[in-house]
Image (cartoon, rainbow, N blue to C red):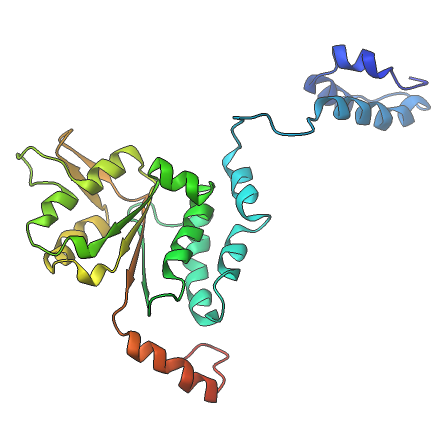
Length: 256
């Protein structure tokens, strides 16, 4: 214990178990000052200069890798000039992020406003935070999925989106997605352009004990872990007039 072991010797014998043993060691007086030096040498031999290709990160580390130490704050920081919206959304997002959201229904967010105000960008940022992976990877895998709802403008298209009724063979876009990714983030873009029959059909998907029926397997798949983000341009003229009125009078508590 009087001097550090040679580096070559450490390479051959050191392991994580030795760090554990050093932490538990109760040395006699005198050599105890060598323990921190020895521990530092062992730790240095166990640490890699870079992460090996293909290594899997723990989920909590992946979130930090995407957005630093605070994923939600970084995501919201990219939405400029919309403090009141961010303040109202942050509470729900934090509950989902910390797995405190109720376990019997999905989180459903409706973002309204003119084009180019960050609705889709915010959806992608939240997907990265909730799922802990870069958005390009999530899109490629299908864990983040965008449905352009203007395509579903006919009543019969409900079946192509949600699947046919029980007893009828076929497929559905949403059941196929949730069967593979029960925790997916689903963006329903311009939801107001879908056929009105979608409103009633989505009540079962969004509500308590929400589920989708999968005609391939004949099973109901829970939507409780899914995050649905709906965007709409409805009311954009009213929304655009609001900043002009708010600029004349400060709205510190977002009451407006």
